[in-house]
Image (cartoon, rainbow, N blue to C red; front, side, top):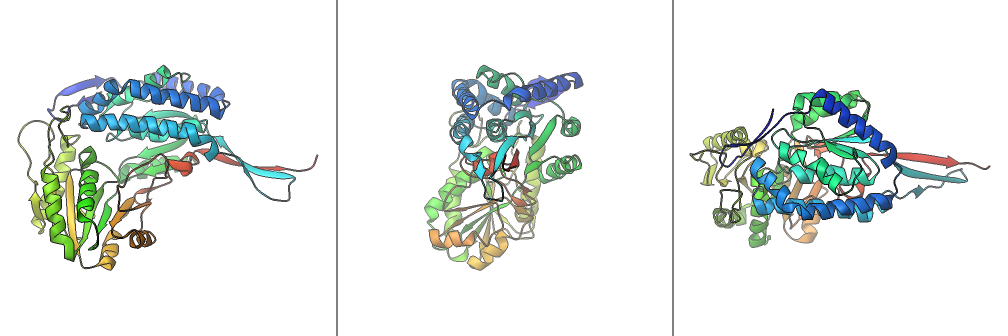
Length: 454
């Protein structure tokens, strides 16, 4: 049974029977059948339908957003923002997908030679619970614009969000089978990956899960994109605008209750501004309201599940036991649900869990560094390589990009995913790219065509 539990009060809000093997077979067959005609549609036809689904998202926002609030605790205004971002992504690929996949003429010994970008077939998106609609559209919008069909396997803890996807696309006018959700338990995923009708796989989730998915896909010689965990550094140097830096880093660290792969998790602050930065972070974090995600006044909701909260508390407790200072939070609250206080840890050092591990919750970890060189060394002292940021002069910060091992680098701004720009990591944060022109080319056949005389 796929069971959704409201993380604010601990009550079961939804139980969904998983798709039977017969239903899974029917959905796979429908996707294969739909691909036969969808791949032959024009870019204009695909774009028109993507714009229609964007309009449908905006029309249905008051029905879709609360699903995230009740199933994984996302504050309602944040959930509505996620739906709008899905609409933006759809419109972006409607506007730019054809140009991203334009045929490239290449000189050779042929009369004419070029590369054209052709669809592959059915793309399987295996997704986590933290941004159930955005992550689905991050896979779907470029894949559909490229002429692929899409099957989404949502996390079992957000079955309502997953079940809403297929009907949403059908209401927007997409042909049946072009996009659907497989409501299955995780152990059933392997058989789907191996199915001959699945051409490629996109996985977002833990590093351990990504290793398993990548091994299965590789054994079937199927392309795979992995967006995995991160322990992103945010470097704050002595010449930074501390007010702006603390404002943005607080916002970035608490979005989705800190349960975001690309959130800054290790703040590396140069010694001369260390204490001042801590005071600003304390003031801003302490002003946020933690509570019922359905309340419009709530800034930070509960963590998605009790086991996730327990893991974050372990990391905090172990770090404090080794000398970190809990300036804010750090204590488990009483009562039902999975609320966890916004926590600010100071004096974090590299041997602590808050530095070494990915902390997937509302915890900001701050480490003092002597100078920029030590900051770069500590930024790279991780098995992850998803994203990172720096707060300093623009010229200096841009020069850091070549020295910090991440897939994304931001100078004086928010680390985020943007339909216009490629997103993805290196090392144990994954491989491949999503979004932007690079993302739409992950799941296509770059076919070389050579034409001689005749």
